[in-house]
Image (tube, rainbow over all chains, first blue to last red; front, side, top):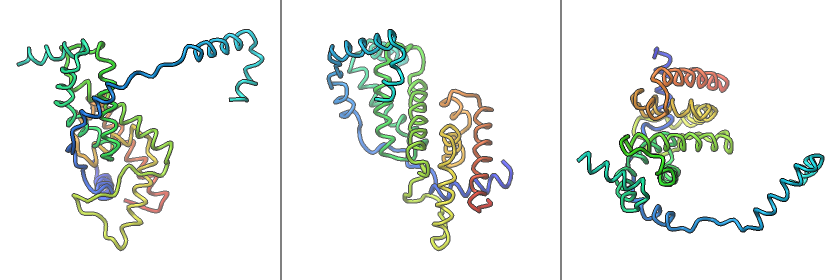
Length: 72
Length: 181
C-alpha cells in the first residue's frame, strides 16, 4: 500500500470506529435447539396439484404465459 | 484426542443432536466472531450464526469428518455474510455497514467530522458486497490476507486484487462527494 492508500485506510478505520468487538455475548444454543425442534413446513397436497395443473396448462397453451405473468 | 474429535464428527454426520450440540457450543463463538467482522452488526451476526449452523446441520451428510470442521463452517458463514451484505445493499443502498458505536480508535473531530464520516460511510456502502467484505476484513479488521483467502475460497492474490479494486472504487466514490483522501 502506498501513502495515499494508507491515508484512505486510516480514514475508513476512523469512520468505522476501529475493529469490531468479536466476542459473542450469549449462548445461541437454546435458539438453535428451538429451531431444530420446529416441525418442518408441510405443503398441502392440493397446492402441489394446483402447481402441476398450472404447469401443464402453460405447456399445452404457451400463449397463456403472458396473461399469467400479467396476473402475477 | 484427534480420534475423539473425529468420532464426534462422525456422530454429527449421522445426525446425533448431542454431537451437534458439542460442535455448536465449541464453534459458535468463532463463527460469530468471523461473521461480525464482515457484517459489523452484532444482531445480524447472531442471526447469521444461527443460519450458518442450520445449514451445517442440514448438509451434515455431505461433510467429510476427516476434514477440518472450522474451515467448513467459516466458508458457509462467509457466503451467508456476503449474501447479507448484497441484500442490505439492494434494500438500503446508502446504508453503511459501519454502524455508529463506541470507538476503539480515534474518531473524527465532532465539529467537522460528522459530515466527513457520513460521506465515507455512504461511499463505502456503494461498494459491491465482495469488495466491501475484502476491504472490511483487510483494512478495518486487519485480518491477515491468508485467513481472508481461506474463508473466501480464493487465492491471496485474489484478496489483494479485491482490496485494490475496493480502494480504487472507494476513492472514486469519495471524490464524487468532494473528499480527496
